Image (tube, rainbow, N blue to C red; front, side):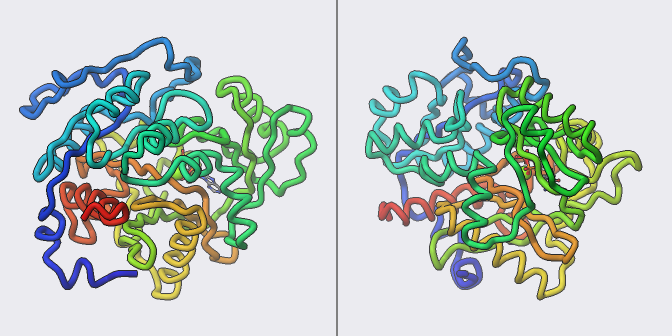
Length: 377
Ligand SMILES: Nc1ncnc2c1ncn2[C@@H]1O[C@H](COP(=O)(O)OP(=O)(O)O)[C@@H](O)[C@H]1O
Ligand SMILES: [Mg+2]
């Protein structure tokens, strides 16, 4: 871990003493069509281009939960534009030709992609084909981490603790499950709490079958059934690469202030309904209140996970303690959420802020470590 970077050097000067042509690739939520009152509106450069190719499951309430709003896209653009020439490129069907034409020095990629189980890999795959450097993980890592079961299989191979699980693609398979209740039932490949509701926590076979059916039908994908980890929950932001990869201050998600009848999970209801700009939920503490031993265990598990999955530049890793107080990996987010408004409780920016990096510095540090990795600086 490179503590020196932040402590010994002037962060601003190293982050801002190079200049690049940067393309910012993104997907925008359909409902985020404007950014009223924002003097730095970049809508005229590229407007939301929604078409029939967005073949996500239209049945669910959380179809576009993973995509970004103009607030986020503009905040990233503004941060990069402090020192670089920035062009926005929407990650749609025309992205390949646009990127080819623009031919940027590097791409800052926050695109979640359009469709299918490898959607997060789409833009990085195009960029590999075009031989353009980009921030963040490569297609293999992005596609793997989006498949929570495959990720757990890899972690298990390396003996990194994670909850016992079964992947089910039929009701018959669900009936044969022998895991220990309570369980949690999730879609195999979603993020941003998509498909995870309070009802996903199941105490018996009847509830289990109900939830598996919901995932199979509404999300049209296999259901990941996991034993429930009852302990404290954390999320760990990592920034950098190799020996210089650094664990940012750990965020704890504590459920003490949840309404009494709420299941203690960071569900869709918790993320998008209970926690609003007007009434922010006070569930996060950063740095988490930890003994040095537990902090070390969690940091080591997260860093090991980052390296095993060959993550690049940044990632956020969800962790929960099991009955033996052992950190278990829940999932890896190689494209972490980065809502710019601190009241919106986005964990990666929160961890960065606790480390002393504001939003602009955080974005530019990600660009810096990527540019260094690609030997552009
Ligand atoms: N095995 C588990 N045990 C306990 N809680 C879990 C487990 N898996 C997921 N959760 C809860 O559900 C939340 C969302 O699950 P996660 O897999 O991180 O989905 P997402 O990709 O939507 O963030 C977690 O933050 C945690 O609160
Ligand atoms: Mg998560």
